[in-house]
Image (cartoon, rainbow, N blue to C red):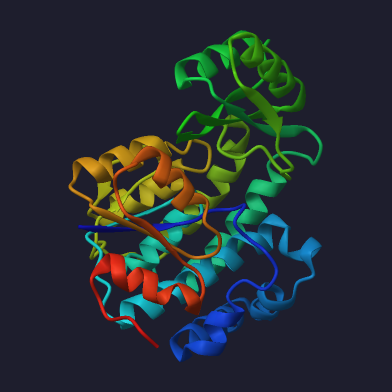
Length: 313
């Protein structure tokens, strides 16, 4: 049983998707569709940058979605048929495009708004995120509770393999980092992010996004999508929509997602899109399970080998 995983923010880099667009007409068509949907050359930003523009959240999110869907269309057109889909934060939108829940043009427009709303929810410089490494989740939660002092700080990404990202106000995150070290964390690293994602400070963004998601035409997923908020497979459009709304301010429970996929019988993981972040996590969480990434034409043969398919150009 194959699960396809789609990456979230942080996997972007200038040049992503260019080789796919040059090699595969179905990938090029996705970039053209994104440009038309946004009324601007998103494809050029992916292929050429500049980096400072690609790093803006309102650009990063539609860019990663577009590269991920372009890569997915290449594999789907060659017969890849996963039994489960999942995506990390933004990647859940890519998963729902792959599942047929969302039309791609609608998805690229709404994640542009999602990025804008998340950026605007907290003034620049007032929020922060940090990675806590080598400390179990319960102790990270304890560090956040004991460090809040009336401010927001909480786990934002529970990634597994001893990695938990926290988010909140700058001062509270700094206190929680110090407390985590005192509780035995191997490292506590401030992350270079523009906003404190997946915490209560994102509630204004969630409220702005909810009516727009409610207005979108959505269909029941053709392939179950395991959601970030509760690690449950979404089989109905209404449940998928609710999960996408709630994930804005809720933590990404990626470790639970991976355990759910394993319990459902997944035997192979394919990360589809830019970067290899999720493949790296999968190798640490599901140590005995084959894992492969697909983000360029050079990766096609490796995916074919683990999937048991002839996927050559």
